[in-house]
Image (tube, rainbow, N blue to C red; front, side, top):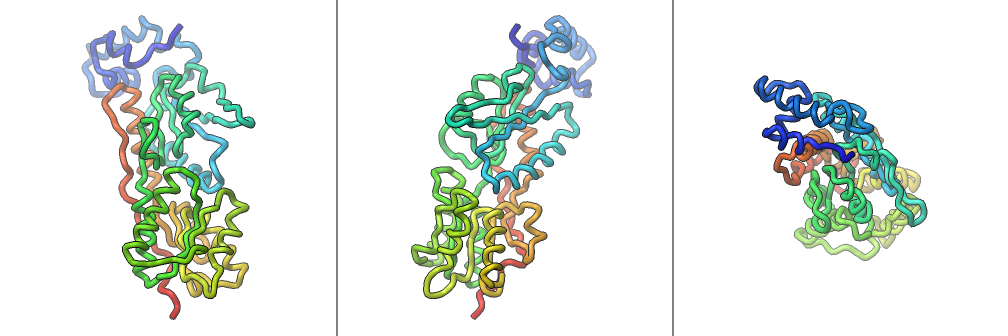
Length: 336
């Protein structure tokens, strides 16, 4: 038997999907006659007690999707985002379930729960691989992407982050301090995040009429092993750069360690800046200057968007408020 949806309950009861949600969650906001009519339809359809496999039919079951292709630096960020999502769900009758997608060689596999007919919605972190997204669409349930940087391709409801502006602001901070020789640490995989971050860096340096030598731009950080050699290459030449712009806090943390082992002092010899503001960044020595991505607001907006989608209400993707510059100890004016 096909699972009855909230939208179908609403149509049978002659009410909005949000009214059905209110009745199912025993919340105020509708009249008692309307509530009774909704619950009568629910009982007749078997939605509450007989939908196969449901964990708690009076609430929504949400899968938080993890993917094995997440690089290590993203796992730092998304682990903290989990807490924000859980906090955003505290006032809602939502069951949060963790599911995964992973590749075995070239074969794509999914957690069984994604095909178990118990889910009302999916939260995914970061831009979804198009093959994964195509498979998820066959489930016919709302999918919300948190921390999206994708600007083209498959339409998907998302909470987007303006990483181009974040990178521009971070680079402008270095320039305003007086830095003119700035190395870039990132990668050039055709992923919107990488393209946006580099574009923000390029726009800020171009506006300041800064020309950088070829080795200062390192775009080959495809994995953790490649990071160290890229940093070493960026430091090469007749003299050191005065600052390192790192596309993520993870790169910046590794850069601080690399510079320490080379006997270089931050920020006396070089300034270092990152993007994300992961919780560990403020406990480093020196504490890391970074662009803060508001994960608490991201989680709140994502759950709000998912709630509307589940209830069949009109909704569209949203952009997270602009990232904030957090100035700590790792940046200073270049030494004369």
